[in-house]
Amino acid sequence: MYWLMTRGSLWFLVFVVLYLCGGALLGWARSYEVLVGITSPAATSAPLVAWILSLMGWLLVPAFVGGVTGYLVNRQVDRRRVHSEEDLERRIRAQLGLPSSEGGGR
Image 1 (cartoon, rainbow, N blue to C red):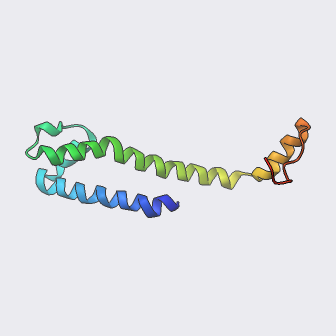
Image 2 (tube, rainbow, N blue to C red):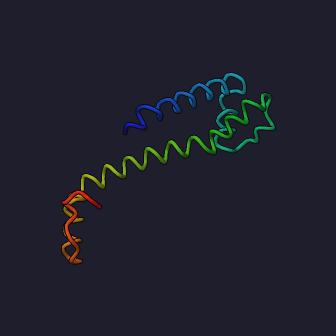
């Protein structure tokens, strides 16, 4: 969550600003079509902005969605976790007959 609120919000802001610039220069429908890959960036009136939007559509949007999804899945897994990691490690070591790692050195 920390990354999402600090660096993720900065990337989201960059995305919004570039999308607004694309909408103003290319038109809102054309900007969306370039972003999702329907229209080629080369077939627009402002190809530089269109290429940046296209790259955002291919790189930034999936990374942001993946980060949010990973965070939400991790939260759900943590809610359902019955035993702590230390407890599980202690149980596994006991079953394998290994010495306990409570001495501090690994």
